[in-house]
Amino acid sequence: MLTFEEKLQIIEAFPELQRKDVSLGRVNFHYDDSIFDKKVVVQHLHPNGNGFVYAANLQEYNVDEKGFVNIRDFNADELRRIIKESIKSLSPNSAAARETAIIGEGQEERWTNDDGDVLLLILEDDWWNVYSGLNLEATFGTYDDAEDYLFEEGFRLE
Image 1 (cartoon, helix red, strand yellow):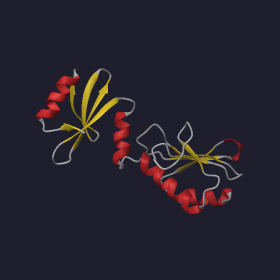
Image 2: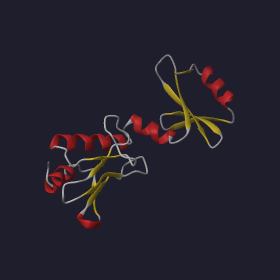
Image 3: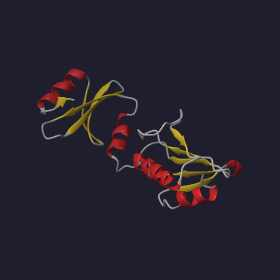
């Protein structure tokens, strides 16, 4: 198991993270460029070596109810990897993160055309919105109107 100091050294090597000292000698690290409200990447790194990394958007980790993974027993390579993946999952440069930020809790469908382009159809506040990436393309009052538009533009439901 890595010591607190060893974990700090690894985490502080990520220049995109900002250190925030919290109570009981614990330390958090924030990613201020996150496209989500969630900005904490490392939470409650404790002098006893315990701590957590945010991994809710990552498939290969078992997360707690808040989306964190306990890093107490991680080796140096594992710690670097999960922090790098966590930052990427919150980054505006990640396609998956952009899509998750747009969809949120809304009902959504993915539509594709023959060129492989993808549009998202999302129900938001009683409106059906069509997105291309982060850009709102069109808004419709009914699902049928949105569906007609997508078919006319050459898109099909995945």
